[in-house]
Length: 249
Image (tube, rainbow, N blue to C red; front, side, top):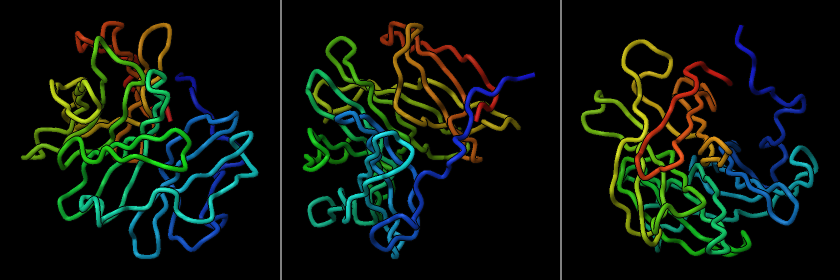
C-alpha cells in the first residue's frame, strides 16, 4: 500500500475569486514565499477578457484572513514588453540571498507564443523586469536560489517541434540572469501509456534538502506535484535520481 505523502487542508480552497476585491474570472497557479513572517502568494488572476495578471495576497498563517491587494500588483506591460500582450502567467518565486532579492520566473504570453521571463524585486511593490530570457514555446520555469560555480541555474520545459518527440525537463545556466546557455535535458518524459508519459514539467521551485535538491514534477493530465526527484549534490554533472514514479498528489 502506498502511503499518502500529502493531505489537502480541510479549509481548501483557501482562495477563490469570490474573495477578490475586483472583478475576475478565476484565481489560480500562485507562486509562494515568506516575507516579514507572512505567507505571500503571487496569484495568477484571469480577468474578464481572459488575460492574466499577478496580484499579491498575504496571510499570517497561510490559510485564512488573506489581505489581497485592491488592484493588480504585476499587470502585463505590452507597451514596453510586447511579449506580454496576452498576459503574464504562472509565477514561481526564488529568494536569491546573494543578491538580497526575490526573482520571479513567469510566462509572458502573446501571439509569439508562451515564453519564460524574469523579474526582480526587493519588496513585492516595485519590480524590475529582466524580460524574456528563453524563447517560445517554453514554460514551467524556476530558478535555483544559489549559484553553481559562478552560474545561476534554471529549470524549464520547452516544447519541441515536432511535438511528438516528447516534452522534457531541461536545465540551463547563466552568469547574469539575462543570458542563458548550456541547455541540457535534466529529466526525460517517459514514452508509452504511462500517466506521466510524453510531457512533464516542474511544479514549485527546487527545494534544498540534506540529500540534494528536491523537485516536484507535474503532468498535464491534472496530476499536481506528482513525482519526486533528487538532483545529485554536484549539479554540474546534470545527474538526477528518480525516487518515485507514482502519483503522490
